[in-house]
Picture 1 (spheres, helix red, strand yellow):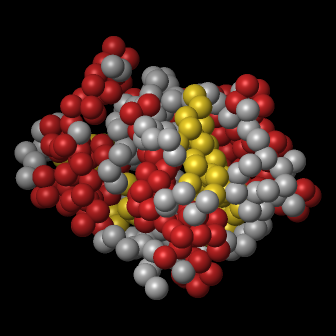
Picture 2 (cartoon, rainbow, N blue to C red):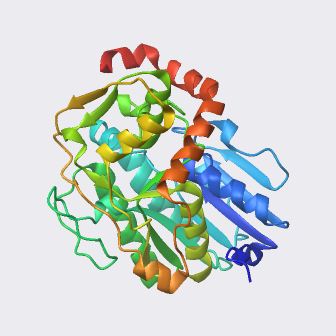
Length: 356
């Protein structure tokens, strides 16, 4: 049997992907329709932080534009789905700090309203909820210890985003225990890869609308010869996982994960942000200068990486793409799609000039 033999288990299924036009969601949709002959995928996305171009045009995909909190969208969902992937989010810590109410509307209410509908359905085999490893990781700039699924959750959070993701986990457990909704929680580490369009969607009040994740930001700025920002000398560390790997992890959560349980999806490798900047500069042969900035006042989750032992043992999941190879694929994709990214970045120029 091949290592991706599990795709066959999605044959003749109907799948709902909430947030399916986003970075991870669209990669998940593309992998499913490319590897499963008989499948129908419903994508729900309000395009707040995504572009319609991310949604494949194929009879296999039904796209519904709108928030999963909208009654019109919820009323259109039928008890016909085998698997549900809940990936909708108010993208990122900094956006949530700028507008906690919007974070609540797009992170917390999305989960509550979706689960309230799904718990009445009878045909669902599994619901996969996307949580965040940063919510659970120990807040430290000292030596990191691998964060396990059983690590204690601190009451002091860095952002409303982290709070919302944990609330989603609480609701996942509640709807599983009280209503039998078969929810599996997937704790994302730092995802990167092709398909993440800087500036995608609408302006959300902060420069993080454009510079939303560290890897695509570094790559784009390196290619364009723009200064690469490095906060706190880049001493922070992250667990970087390639987007195709995390999508396979999500599928394995759906097929093999135990309802009511939680699994880390990461590489298990700790990489510093300074190392990332050096790698991106070298691989793009960039002339960009490093711009050293102070520590972000809100960010106390300095050094972290995930334990992947449980996911390996229970799901049969391991990240396959090593960081350097994943970076090269992301750099190549960025070069090939630079015009699309430029267009999305430029549509926010009027706002962005106030945040330089």
